[in-house]
Figure 1 (cartoon, rainbow over the protein chains, first blue to last red):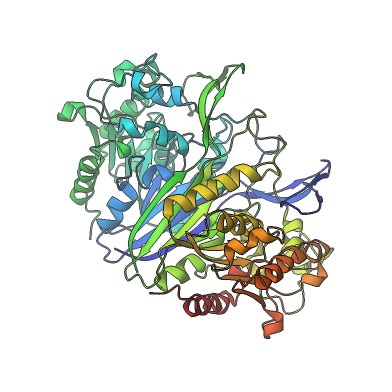
Figure 2: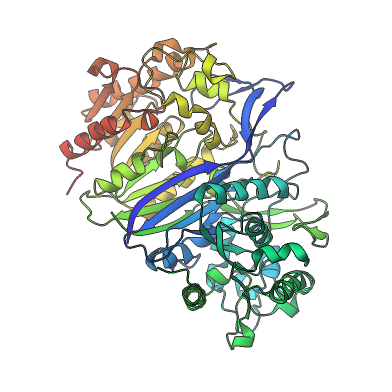
Length: 318
Length: 318
């Protein structure tokens, strides 16, 4: 299935920390206190990537999977219910698959210093995830799993919701520019590529395509929480096929009712400029019940097959 | 090379956060401010694991790779100089390889609340890594790579040192008990296994073996920063082969001069109780120049081959 695995960090910048106190810390049981000096050079705002190269490559380009807010690349790996995720699906389909952890998340590391990251981090609660990811309607969360009312016909693997919460990581609201720089650097390093982006990274992915339309050969945006504004600049993407996918129940959640129009306006404007953009509304296609976490839903393989078919139709397979 | 890849989280506990203020945050460019409520249930102290199963399994048991302090599972992946790391070496040798991120690190997530993690996190500076990992002697670090004096004959890939710094993540000094619980839970979940542990995780790995000598079939401890104290309890390990590996230049660094005797005392006591413990001092074996990051040194494959040979001699291969 896989002939090679590897990883690397990309992007970021050096920072010098000064003026902070040295503290005495015991770093291993039974060890002596050790003076930990936080002052000096550190590296910040880098991004982590792991790649899996398939035994038989059938795609023309590497496929980069970018996760959403408060999450890491684990989004794309084994699903919370233990079934294979999109990382495994697309490597089996013959894509070199690159899963990244964005700046401040997971193996990309984070800089806890007020000097570097502005503001305070916040960790998503189970209630917020349940509602924001449209597993249940606002107000339907309960600590007791038996008392949680999911949206009717929800395809999220409900019994695995508490396991899903183990994937949440803290985030800041202040690192968009650094994250965009790191993603743009990743595209430059990998070269020609196709992006699958989700939620918060929808905006990053579409902007990365605008910054490098010669290298980004296609973008699949799952429920992008934002998008570049309509305007003449979008003409740069007229030869970059874009697929935008939305799940079910968008109207039940005021945040998504508010955020969805940004990607609709983007798609309409790009289409008017001659772009090859497809708006895939799953319920309108007769596919009901998908949450915001489309890649984790019980029908995720069927959605991946639609994405795979779209890539084939747009000449992205060998 | 690899027939299956997957990942999961294990361990940890639920925590309810209360009494903290709601903040307004803009979570995507152009989005509306969104009230982020940190109060509610979260999951903390879990551990992340990714496994790679080889096409042809030749080892009897899964091989679990546990990283050291201020680092993540990336320790075992592609080396900072771009060469394959021990993850790749051992999966090629036919081991199912499980690379984890410990509690508070990488994809395991962290809990930024004083309510959960005690104390403040600290991020290792390049200077501390240069000295503590025995790449250069204390006092030899310089910001300018051309002015850094490495220890004579150092086998660390010096030109990749700044890339190595991209792997550092913040740590706390207060999570030993939670980390041990999560590692013990991982052993219970995986079942029969062999551990390769490094530095901070040396102590965790040897204690995990003491807690489950029926499941841990061997421990390879690379420069363990601590070890369980000598005493009758160690007799539980008399049928668990243990290999302890030390690199070069230990005498140049007061921290390691102080910490090495703990594993020496452990090894001597276990040997006296009939254990099969081997103390592999690389310089004494004629192998000079290894840093604390043995798995990243330019001769890392040769050291991996010694470990592989040790596993074969102790009946751990099929």
